[in-house]
Image 1 (cartoon, helix red, strand yellow):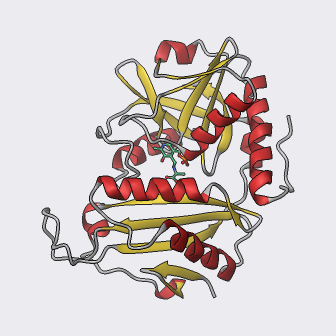
Image 2: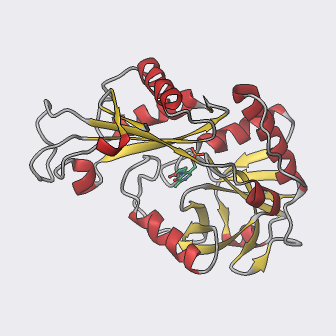
Length: 290
Ligand code: PDD
């Protein structure tokens, strides 16, 4: 049987249901997280749960469990579902109440849902890189909240998919912000550059691991916004996310990034990132070839 968690209880996945007046369903009034599982172990779970609490706090939802209780619950879910390689999706909404834009009374209980999915590492794309497009960032000004409202992101991702691309690189004015579901990095003259974590982007957990790796390995980096012109002139470009890790970008709007091959610093970060996964979750069987 496959299980899901609804409000602290493990239930049969096929029987896990929420009310049609759940505010997540009606308004997207909630926040979410995606956590990677390798070898049956959760990667950077503490960081994800801390961000979950922060996102929830910023919209006035209090997580009814401690981070430790939540971790134990998710561990149980992974074990029960025999998940070896995949993701945990979890979300919390403001609960079920008659539809009204105003928040419901304080005694309305938030709905917490979590379930797992088997997902293989995208080794082929990690090896060869992916194609992207650029598109205007039309989202709201609190992109630091991992909100269930993803319409802007979905429209951007769909546009990329329709052009046979993996990701859409979003920009405001002439400044690159982030991907539709990832953070974006450029490398210029040996320096790794990525947008600072403010209200215009999501503070990616993968991004933070990469920046930590940079500082521990004497790889220069700058956390600042960069322009479309800098993107076009970059030596290397890559994206990061929980499911995509350190993903080389080899094409932007049909223009090759340099020679259209993953660059040396991207490769180095991929290998150091793999080491970090292996430290937390044990050896990985499939390797990225370079
Ligand atoms: N997306 N920016 C956006 C808009 C994202 O949706 C994501 C992640 C990231 C990268 O964050 P992290 O490294 O913590 O995964 C940046 C997840 C995976 C998703 O929505 O499926």
